[in-house]
Image 1: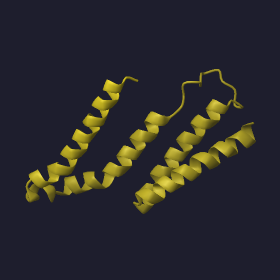
Image 2: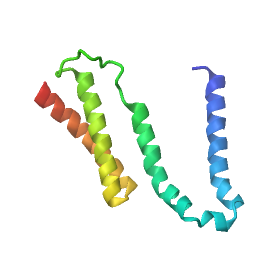
Image 3: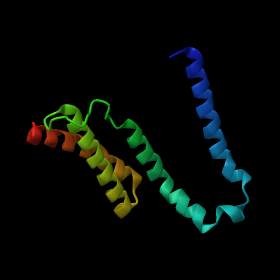
Image 4: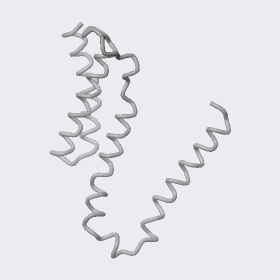
Length: 119
């Protein structure tokens, strides 16, 4: 990566962060109190977390004729299983931190389980 790319990416993230933090103070209170905006605000952390998990899925080494004892397949199955557990726990508890802890524990536990059972 070039240094100009890193500088551009850093300033872009800073600008987006500043705009998203300043925007609520510029929007009238009447708009901020609408029910759809409250629902969006509640689901936004989970949406961001799901997008981050989807972008981190490692499926490049997985093909259609792969064996069940392949490590890449075990990792992909563990990631998908952990994502499902995160969604379920967040739906039940509405606690983002608890969901993240479950996700981290689930991905490690499921990867170990698939490696032991499938070999």
